[in-house]
Length: 309
Ligand SMILES: O=C(O)c1cc(=O)[nH]c(=O)n1[C@@H]1O[C@H](COP(=O)(O)O)[C@@H](O)[C@H]1O
Image 1 (spheres, rainbow, N blue to C red):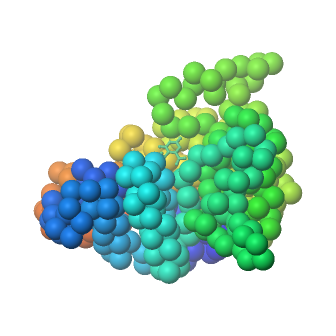
Image 2 (cartoon, rainbow, N blue to C red; image 1 turned 90 degrees about the horizontal axis):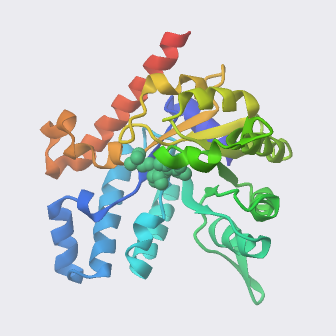
C-alpha cells in the first residue's frame, strides 16, 4: 500500500489527503433536509446526511488527490448508523482508487491491539471463513503502550500489505505536556521517532517503509528534526489550514525527492464553502468549493517546495 501511496502522489503531484471529518454542522441544510425527510431527525438521518456529504466531496475531488483520511470519531458520535456511514465511505473511496487512512488512533495491550488491527486492517476468522471488517489501507496508532501494543498492528500490515501512521508529535497545543518531556536530555517525541524508524526498517516497500509517523504541521522545527530521524518513513502531517499550518511550514517534512510527507486538511477542505475565500460557491456548490480548496492547498505546498529549490 505504501507503494500505491507513493505512486499516486507522484501521479497527482499532490502530497495531500482530504480529511473526511464530517460534523453535522458542516453538512449544508439542503443535504440534511433530504436525509431527514427519508429517515427523520434520527441517528440514521444524520448518518445518511454525512454519507451524502462525503460522497459529493469525494466525487468532486478524487481525481486530484491520492488519499483520504476519515476520522472515525466523527462517525462514532452517531452510533451504529454512524459506523455504517464510515464503512460506506471507506468502500466508496476504495472504489475511486483512493488510499484510505483510517484515523482510529488505537493502541492497547497486545491481545486487544490485535483485535483492533484485525478489525481495521486485517480479516477476522469466523468458523472456516474470513471477513474483512472496516478494511482501511492504513491506520493511525497510538504508541503509548509500547512495542507490544504496536507489534500486532505491524504483524497484520506485513500480512495484508497495509500500513500505519504512529503518533510521534501531535499538532495540538498541549502535545508538549508529555511528548516534549526530556528523557536523558532528549525529548520523548524524538525517542518515539527513533522507534518508528526501527519498526519501519523491517517493513520496507520499494522506496519507503509502510510504518509511518504522525507529526503536526504546527511544529515545523520538530518536523525538520524528525524528518532526519525517520528518513524512510512517510510522515502524515495534520494541522494544515484550520489549525494554522501553511505550505511554508511544511517544506522540511519532505525529503529531497519531494516525497515522504502527506499533508492532511479536514475542515479546510470539507467546510471550505463556509470560508470567506470560497463564499462565491455558496452552500449549494459546497463540493465545488472543496475542489477549489484542494487546488489551492496543492498550489500552496508546491509553491513552498519550489521556492526551496
Ligand atoms: O492523527 C491525526 O490525523 C491527527 C494527529 C494530530 O496530531 N492532529 C490532528 O489534528 N489529527 C487529526 O487530523 C484532523 C485535523 O483536522 P482539521 O484541523 O480540520 O484539518 C483531525 O481528524 C484530527 O483528529
